[in-house]
Length: 48
Length: 171
Image 1 (cartoon, rainbow over the protein chains, first blue to last red):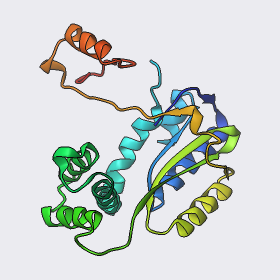
Image 2 (tube, rainbow over the protein chains, first blue to last red):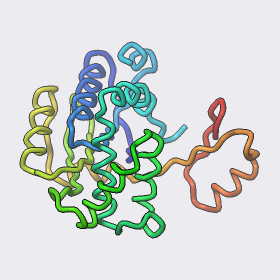
Image 3 (tube, rainbow over the protein chains, first blue to last red):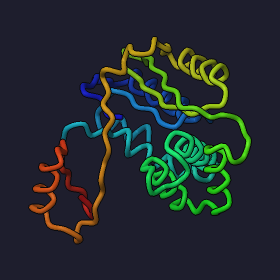
Image 4 (tube, each protein chain N blue to C red):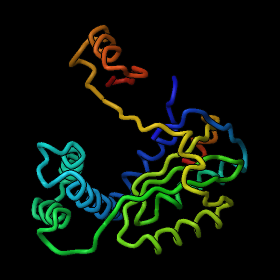
């Protein structure tokens, strides 16, 4: 699934979003998670 | 580049960790079962099952495991009925989240997902609340030396593709 628009997130909100995504993916029943956030490359690197 | 999500690259890294945990297997098995139930047990006439089988082979799943999963889907082997279900919700900062899940127990899954949302500062929404923001899209990856750019562009445009992107070793 691909979003048709996106929301910019930065700072602590970005970290929160990533934590939520990971937690959802870790659920046994979940097959895929999609979200419409976009964040600066550096923050993605810091979290990844 | 349109529609490109950096999350996908993170997911890729995570994929390797998940594989170690063996979680990928149970997901693949569920997908095999559901695909076989929806479209029949023959991969030839069932693209979803064919994709599931390819994915399972890529992870070196034993053939017996695959066959059993497919048979559970077609009903040849009795087992819990697994079904597709989608959830929609909002995360921090109003980020829309769309989840595809496969479960044999909707009540348990919805409880788990609601719990995760509330714990990480989001909330589970009504079906339809964010689905309109997403489109189901596929991606086709080709080895770079297999074809030249012009040919790909031509085929992609004819097929109504949205974007052709250039990666180091692949298209």
